Structure formats: structure tokens, C-alpha cells
Length: 143
Length: 378
Image (cartoon, rainbow over all chains, first blue to last red):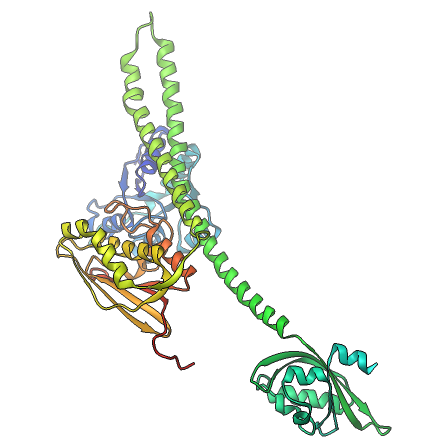
């Protein structure tokens, strides 16, 4: 599995999403990258739309988004036994200590403030990615 | 000695049973009783009911045992006025150590007590404002950083494009333009970067001017006077006729109470609420807005109810947050209308809140000081 997990960018700002994608690609990551425009879209993906079985994922999650925000997405995914081990990297513009603590309590893997150092960022993703194949998300329909 | 004391303090002397045997002129002046009315009475004549029985038991316990008692007491004058006195009571004892008489020396501290109460009120208000301010700074710093991230990030992309153009030019032979090598930068990366940098700068500009607009609200002079809200709404509806007709909206205005408020600012609040009703209407049904009003506990309350898309419970508190937009893609706006309404109402001793369900329309309530038409019970 040379590619590693699919990277799911959840980000309402189109510019941020493009920057993340372009920088990860130029840092040498070859993973599949998908973009979701808000929290509801990623929840829909995991809870109803996910069709590829035996795929591994890594989520890059923005916090402040319209409709469903990132904290709520984190809470809902981590509350479901199927997704508890899903690696989630919070990627946000503020570094409010209360917010960081809240995300860690809810079970995020890493909390990173934008703008990021993309070489280091890619390295973090690579390292997390090495463990991700062990954390297969069961396909839909499996209880 | 006594003359000097009488000049400075409120003085009374009582016998061991607490009956008043002497009062000076200052005591009479502040209590508004004549000397004849006071002599032979005990201090219950000026009891205001502020202090507990425990308080007076402690006072008597102290002076009966021959100790000096000090404290602050609120008394009631003959005409009902309440006044605070800083009090020292000295017992005078006979040879056997039993009290002969008590001398009470007091200073009027009514003003100081009022200042203290005002200070507490202002401190609580400031703490509240501080919390609001912190929330605003947090939101604004986040919202300003967001476009900044784009400006920085795409700025770096411009650097990279520049580097690759340099590389292409250095390797170009005979002054020929290396079109194929330049294309990705000139047609792809650079225009994309410029688009996001320009949009980011424009966004920051909008946020900053919105922030200035919000901050100026605290300084603008308000002209508070009796306000005919019926008439005010007639004017607003006339001004918005075009947009309302276009949306096939039907607006019903019931008879509304008058209130005390600033005409221009209040007008802006109602115009903003109607504009929101238009923006967030449910496209599948014609917009219906009903504006009702009633008076409750000294407040004129106006309810602007629509049958639009409504607001989910978890979003209802957020609608008043600065720059918060429920659906930024679907509707234009800067996320300031309700924040400004809240601030302006706050300055006029008013309030705004919302009751809504998702899909079931929203009702915004505006409360402003009512003009008393019936005598109040208090």
C-alpha cells in the first residue's frame, strides 16, 4: 500500500483547501485527496455515502465552518465505535488553549494551527499514515 | 467638647433600657423627628427593617457587657427616607460595672453607601462587557486570520512560480521565450494565487470596516424619545415595497405599543429584521410576516414572525455573534445586522431574542422601554 490512506480535507475556505492540497502534493505525498466543503458533507460521507470497502482514511478537519462545525464532527465520529480509531488532524486558524484541550479530550490525533509548515506537516501525515492500514474502517452495513 | 462633637456628629444618649434621653440637632435633622418626638422613645422609631434581629442582638450583647460597638446601620427617617450612619456606641458604666447610659455617635454615610452600590453595579456591568469583548476579539481574530492564511499561502505560491520562471529563463537559449515551461506558472499558479490574494485582502477590508462600524455604535449619540412604531414600520415597508412585492411577501402589522427609543436606530433594527425575513424565506411558499406588539412589565415587546426556513436550536445563540453567517454561500451579507441590533438595543435598555424551529419560521422579539399608559403597581 504505497499510497497510504485517503486524505479527506474538510474545509469551508476554498483557498485553504487548495493550499493544503498543493502543498501536500509538492511535499511528495501521493495519497488520494478529497475535499469536503463543510461538516455536514463529511458526516454524510462517513455515515451514508461511503461506498468503497476496506479503504483507510485520514481526516484534516477545520473547526469554524457553517452548518456543522469541526468540533461537532469530531465529537460525532469519535462517539461511533466504527470510527473511534480514525485519525483526525484538527487544522484551524486559532490556537485557543480551551479549544485545543477540548479537541484532545474528544480524541483528535494532532492539533495544528494554520498556516502550517508543510514539510513538517507532510511528515506528520506520512507517519500517521504508516499506522493507518491497521485501522481499517469497516464498510457500510457492517454493524 | 460637646459643642465640637455636636458640630461634627449625630449624637444620641440612651438610658440602660435604650430609651433616648438626649439627641443633638443633627440627630433631629437627619431623622426628621423633633426632639420632643424622640425623647423617651427607643431607637426602634427609626428602624428601617434592613437589619436582622441577630444584628441588633449582637449590638446589645456587645454594649451590655461594657464593650464599644461599631458598625453601619440603615435607618428610616420620619418621612420614610432611608439613610446610612456609621455608628459607634460607647457604654458608660457605674462602679459595679453595670451600664449607666449609652452614648451613640454617628456619621451620615448615605452618599458613600449609594456610591458603593453604584460601584458594584458598574463593576458587574463591566465584567459582563469584558466577557462580550473577549468573545468578539476571539471571533474577529479568527475571521481575520482566515483570509490572512490565504494571502500568506498564495504569496508563497507566487514565490515558487517566480523561481520556476527564473529557472525556465536561465535555461532558455538565444533569448527565446520558453513558452511550455512558463505556461503552468503564468496561466495556472500565478492567476490562481492573485485571485485568492485579492479576495483575501478584500475580505479583510470588509471585516475591518464592519468592525469599525460596530465600534462606532458605542459613541453615536442616541436621541431617545416617544416612538410611534406603527408609523415607523409604515415608512420601512414603503421603502422595501419593491423587494417585498418581488418576493410576493405579505406583511401584516397589528396595532403596536409606543416605546422610548431612538428613531433612526430602531428603524434600522426593524428594517434589518424584515430584510432577514426576505433573505431567509422558504422558496417553496410565499413569505408571510406578522408584526405584533404588547406591553409586559414596563417593556414594549414587538414580535416579528416569519414563515421562512427557521433556525436550528443549536444555531440560535450564534445568530447574534459578530460576523457569524448561517449560510454564507446562499445569502449576501457581512454577519453584522443582528450583532448591531443587539448592541443598539443594549444601549437603549432594550433586548432582542429569537424563538424558532428548523423549517418552521422564526420570530424575533425586540423589547424597549414602554411608555406607561396605566399606573404601575410599584
